[in-house]
Image (cartoon, rainbow, N blue to C red; front, side, top):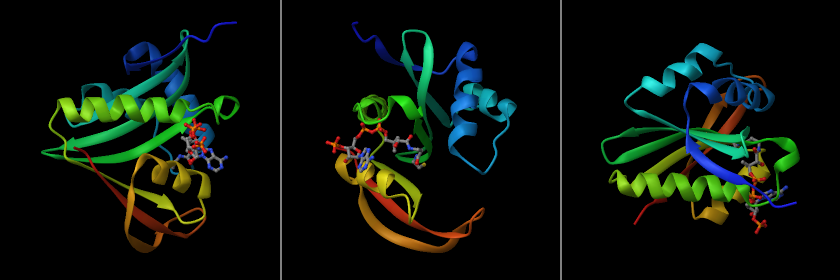
Length: 149
Ligand SMILES: CC(C)(COP(=O)(O)OP(=O)(O)OC[C@H]1O[C@@H](n2cnc3c(N)ncnc32)[C@H](O)[C@@H]1OP(=O)(O)O)[C@@H](O)C(=O)NCCC(=O)NCCS
C-alpha cells in the first residue's frame, strides 16, 4: 500500500493526537490545554506528522528573533526508524529559513542515545552540558546547537 505521510501546521483538529503522542513520550506534563494554546502563541510553531489524517508525530519549537528553541519532538513508536523524524525536521528547517531563523538550540537527556544520534545526523553540534537538569529521573542534559544557513 502506498504511504501517505505529510507534515502540516498544528490546527485544533490535531490537538488530541499531539497530546496522545506527547503523553506517551514525555514525563514532564503539558496539559492538553497548554498544547492547544500553542496554536495562538505567536512564538510557538508546532508541526504535525500525519499518516493520512492520523497524527503520528510532532515537533514543537519557539522562535525568538533569529533563534529557535526545540522543546519537543516525537514520532509514534510503531512509525520510528522510517526517516519520518528526519522528514519532520526537514519541514521545520524549511519553515525556520523562511522566518529568518539562524540557529536552533535544544537539550536532550544524556542517556537518550537514539535522540542524540538523531540530532547529530541532522548536524546539531554539542555545545555544553547542564548538571541535573531533568527530574523524573534526575539526569544531566546535553545542549546542542544547529546553525541554519
Ligand atoms: C528521536 C525520534 C524523534 C527519531 O525519530 P525517527 O523517525 O525514528 O528517526 P528517523 O527514522 O528519521 O532516523 C533518523 C536518524 O536518527 C538516528 N536514529 C533513529 N533511530 C535510531 C535508533 N533506534 N538507534 C540509533 N540511532 C537512531 C539515526 O542516525 C537515523 O539515521 P539512519 O537511519 O540513517 O541511521 C524518535 O526516536 C522518538 O520519537 N523518540 C522518543 C521521543 C524523544 O526521545 N524525543 C527527543 C527528545 S526531546
